[in-house]
Image (cartoon, rainbow, N blue to C red):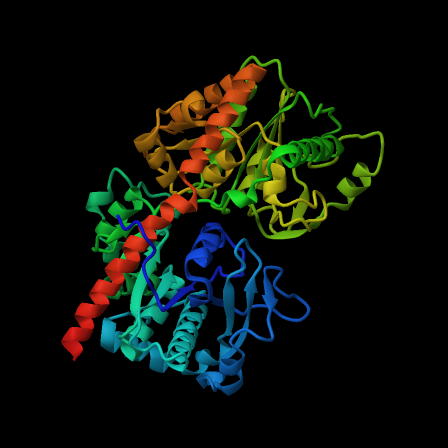
Length: 550
């Protein structure tokens, strides 16, 4: 493992989630940024999509009039590509270039034909967001090429890192146009593996029997899978985030990743001292107050046992079905504490509930209609969480509440970020079926909140390989989950939650301390070494290629 930072002239990282918060990749990049910025300073440039407007600006990006000013004033990019340069509003404040890529749509057929000719990428059956991802990827590659040439680094130690299939065509384009740049491709989850799971098919027991190309044809994923597979094969270094996903890549993409780069966390997101205590108190008060306004039930912020889950809106893959069933099993257990369970998963949100806002303003509360959801959504009949909560009874000792919006501090009900509420919880549960890494449980322990996850997550596998699987040892309990033990897992999670609910104050403090200790071992200052190894691998492959070209 490389210990010292690798010397680089330029380091680009391209993702659809740069300055564009959608899911876990945003957390990966935004928390990693501070460590990379400390190492590479002005040589680090993130590239993201300019999908914003004057009426809807990015809250994560601040434009600069001085950064790369001479390049912006002199460059003429093809296909109407426009750029904005500024800082990403995350710890470290790294430089970011937002790329307007719409002009690439007019020449997509020519681009797709070239990618088929050079790399065998089959775009024939493309649909949905494929065109958008490819246009952004190619536009980003053109920007990288332009910047590298302008700064005179064509033969320097330059790395372009591309995340997920949405940027894969950019990697292929750059290899075609500027092979002197070393490339890294990271798949955070294979498109076909996610699709297999999302379609209700068992992945793990049958993994060795699956052929990625065949499954892509069966599940109508040919274009995305073909692009992802080509990017993985053509990259100078191919990486993924966990051993469990490395096995998936080896089987479905037919290439074993060169380096596994587990996801770390930036401790600067967690308040300390009196700010931590005040934040926890505020979170508990607002969560219990909203619950009372919805249900009419009284919740004591000091005594209520508050649990939560969150993440991407994938009902089966993220174990949201299992969370609901585990909480229902908990409701049938003997418990002296009132339990409040929050499901914080963004959906197709419409607006905050006006009747809830009116109830929050009153001193006396009565149960509202649908007392389990905080915001109205556009598709209640098609939303699996809404349907499930509408079907089950709400027991007296357990209350489940669905928060179907991004918690960015401006949701209209809580007006707190996800982290602002996470800090107030007593436990979290992330019982994923498909989870290449698992940022949500790592975030939880960083805030001192004990968490339950499964052996099918990369984070869970890391815990099992690094600690005793015990709340007192690490603040985490990893439940063994497979393709066919759903009910047993639900029962185990209910027992774990009951254990935490009945823990003494001294036990709870010890478990919280153990959780924070675990998080410190997953800090980016430690895990960045895996990326340094990937940088060295990519440069070595680039050097061999350039010797062959010359």
